[in-house]
Each structure stands twice: as structure tokens, then as C-alpha cells.
Length: 505
Image 1 (tube, one colour):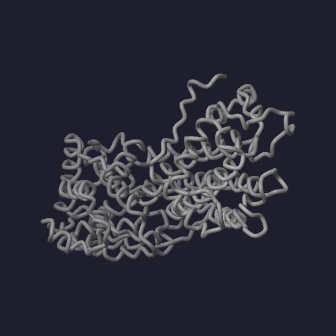
Image 2 (image 1 turned 135 degrees about the vertical axis):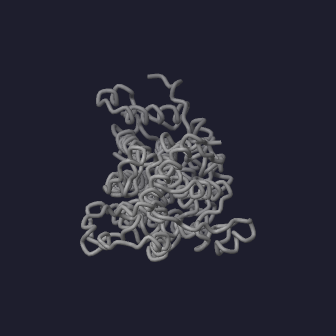
Image 3 (image 1 turned 30 degrees about the horizontal axis):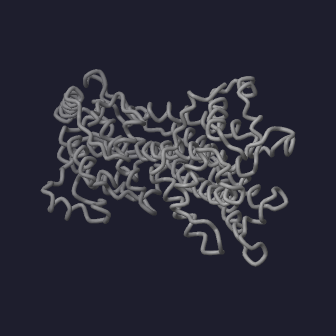
């Protein structure tokens, strides 16, 4: 059980919630902060003090005063009018992350919602009643208004939810499970949608999957190194210590561990003096991508525990201030950085694929074909990888450098952070497929070399990989193999960790 308090939620805890379905609960002290914050809102309504979003319109309508009898109705209109996100739904894990992160933000006690709101969010997450949230339509300031409005619809019994693999109307599911729709009160609608939880939720999933991808690329790259009889001298610890990047040093150590005991690995001068960069520079490239993970993790864990709605109720309800914490620029920049890092993992992987299949670059059968000429073997797999890598290059263009004014120029600079996060997810998924293609080719090349000559790590990965994709003895529909291995790579059915503590320096 993970206890949320709005202060110290971590990526590791989010991984357990999203991937292991660990339940969540609410810290009682944080719930007391929620109650105090709500009392401040109710005092404002009672004395008819003018405060943005409580008794005024929104955006350019902030100067329009709302009558006391319409304050609650204002929140309902807000949710319905802002629920105009478009496109395919976010992945279910991302939508669940949105629910958890919105709940965690409200528990900071700066938002002015009633306890019933946070309790309902907790119930949705624990019972896997996950809102169906279209993925397009957010500018990333004022927060993720459109997608979070679709989340808020579920609280009032509208919209749709994922229910045991099906998309169903919330109203029907509520009736079956005994939930009553909530009536939103003053400020609650705004508190639910004025935040960065869509881009941050997508960022959380991106981080978890990018971290796994980079681990896998170390394993797969090491197998390719063996299959191409690569030179281990380039991974000598002193080379990497001379430069000094911890991540580069760690990747070199991982490769030395993964290739330990291999009779295919060579030394400089035995077969060639130097390898191509895609082999020789694995520590430098993979290590640089690992560096980005550290930056992204820091920004995500701050944002996961941030108050990002507006206005905020501060100093025990004595101060209410309109600010701009909903602006997604920190996450927009982090996601653009992660996009580039993940794209580079695919770029270098595709170059290793080329070295595995191109008969001008190795001494293996052309395109790893069982009958070169009559059968094409892995020829078009490299085409597919090249296509994915090229697509990634367009997706990697930074979204955060763009801005389009909205709300009659009141909101005149926006982050496009959710676009960055969505594109990042696509890049990671494309890179995962490129990694799957490299693994198929590396396994086939190792088979030609003699799997008995490979390292223990390569034999272990080969053995598990061959349960998913059999040897290429004849041309077949390889897209099925790529998709099957891609699914296996993201399934968690293989331990990609490396115990480098035993590796000699």
C-alpha cells in the first residue's frame, strides 16, 4: 500500500502503482489540510469576495462576476465546455497515472476541494475505473485543461471509463458498482483541470519505459558486439574514467559484464584495429542517454508532488493568489530532452542492424539469409528499422519551442508540454521496435557464429528470445516476429538488470 500525502511520491512508487497494481491510500494529515483548504473557499463564497475561478469566469472571462446562486453551476459548465480533447485515448496506464497525480496534488491542501473529491479519485485508481481521456487538445498552459476535463467528467458520472478491458459509459458503471455522481461545488471544477497531470502522467510512463529500453539496448548491443566479433579493448575502464562521465563508465562496465566469457569477442589487431562507432561508442552514446534520465527523473518527481492549479489557497486559507504554476514548461523541456535521448537509442541500434545484415560490412551470409538470393532474409527488416528511425527524427523536433496564444491573448505563451510527452511516447515505442529488430538479427548472427561460443549472458538472452522468435530457416512474414518480440521486450518477463559490482576494473 502506497500512502499519498502530496509531498514525496516517487517514480518507483508510480511504477508499482501502474505496473504492479499496488493500491493507494490517503494520509490522514493531508486530508486535514484538504478540509482546511475547503473551509477557506466556503468563507469566500459566504462573504462574496471576488476571487478568480470561484466567483468569476475563466481566462478572458476572469473579469466577469458570477452571481452567488450560479457559483456551483459555473463548475459544471467549466468541465463540460472544456472536455473537448480529441484523438485516440491515452494508454490506460497514463490515464491511471493522471488520476493518481491529480489526487496527490490535491492532497497538498492548496486547491480547496472537498474530501469527497479526493476519496473518489482514490476509489477510481484502486478499482481500476480509469477515465477514457483523448490524447490531443492540450496546450500545456493553463495546464492540461482539455484532457483533465475528461477525467473530471467521470467524477460527475459523465464520460467513459475503462472497465475490465472495455470502454463503457461512466453512468452505467456507477449504477452497477453503487457510486453516485458528485455535484461539483465552488472552485472544484477548476481545481481538477488546472494542472499539468496529463503531461506529467505521460512523462512518468515515458521515463519508466525509456529506462527499460536503455537497459535492453545494453544487452542487445552486447549481443551484437559478440555476433560481429567486436573489439573489447574499446570498453577498457581506463578509457571511460579518462573522460569521467559516470553513466558512460557504467555502460562500459555493463558491456564488459555481459560479454564475459565470450569466445567471439576479439582484441584490437586480431581481426581489425578498430570497430565502427556504433559498436565502439556504445558507452558514450548509451551513457549520454542515461544522463538524460537523471535530469528527467528530477523534474518529474518535483512535478509529481507540485501544486499546479490556480488560484492557490495559501497560509491556512488567509491568502489566495493567482499565479502560473499550471505552466508546463519544465516538463515540456524534459520531455523534449527525453525524446532526443530515446531517438538516439534507435539511431545507433539501426546502424548496428546494418552492420549485422550488410555482407559488405561483415563475413556473415548476406542479410542473414538462409539462402542468399533466393531468400531475402533480414533485408527488409533493416528497411523497417530505417523507417522508424526516420519517423523519430521528425517527432524529435522540440514541441516546447512552439507557442500559440489562446483565450483572446490572455494566455499568450503556452508550453506544448503534452505534445512533447505524446511524441516522446511514440519515439520510445518506435525505438523499442528497432531494438526488437536488432535482437532478431543479433540472434540469427550468433546462430551462424555458434551460440556455444557466446557469453553466458548472450546465451541466456538468446534462449529466451528464441521462445518468441524461432530461427530464420526460410523467409516468412517477419512483421509478426517483430511485433511478438516487441511485446516480449515490454512484458517484464526478462530481468534486464546487470550486477556490475563483480566486474573487474
